Image (cartoon, one colour):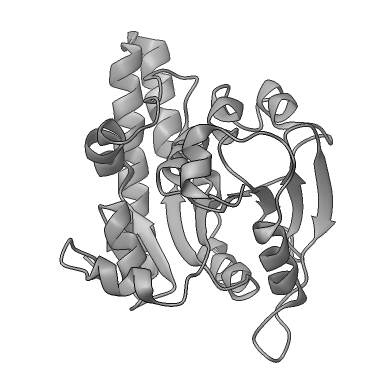
Length: 266
């Protein structure tokens, strides 16, 4: 397998004492794997972002669609279909790891933070996360049903990892401005997503197929479209400073107890 591997042997104490960076979970939509330039565009988008610990979750794409068709034909149980789709996500994640050999492959969220001593991107195995880490966390487990897809799984990773931001890289933006709930109702994200996303400070959706990476910043009540600048000559984009400011900003709205434990300033 291509790519480096992060293990439990990382010195977590040393990392905790280093200069802190925000944690960012990135979900690469499975449909993007159908386009030959998706990895090139992912690299280009990453270069425009502010410094962060980046953790990548990859969607199931066509393989998850095949499971859905098998369910239609053969009547799989919801649990069986769910775990087959998670396997599809794991396989796609391995594919991206092979295409991004400088990235770190990780099966644990703790090791993913350590991985950023060696690379600016870690790729997480969703199967291990859902089987081993989610059950040991303080969060409510995700339902094993078609209400949950890779969107909610990426959101759950962001919550458990105490990420400051979740970015959904997709092939398009929501059909109309609205809230997370309206995006869910429109089928842009899965039906359970808005429930998990309540515990995430900042959420962006980015059209990775659009040259200027048009994006939407979601709040609990609305979404705001914007166009993200590409990297400037210094290697740091204007979007980077803006992202750092927004990731550090807070609102007066009450936050869930679990979120306050991750982000005491909220």
